[in-house]
Image: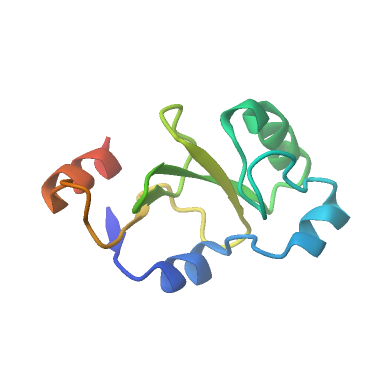
Length: 110
């Protein structure tokens, strides 16, 4: 498993979609959570979108500083990417709010 600690590098590697205009053009602009960030209620439509546009894949935000490059039903939010879709790739950033690095890595590995 590859763990990245720089969020910008992780977004570049996974091709995280951050352009609202592009998302809107694709018909997948977020309706509830903001720019290119999607809630649990949108998971099914995101999965349908990824089946239609196979160059896209889902990323799951498991906590404030933990994002995995795959679908995880425990996610708080979902993101779209069109880059490296290796499911072992994850981001663990700065650790705060009493969360230890070991705990964050454990969540990312599960």
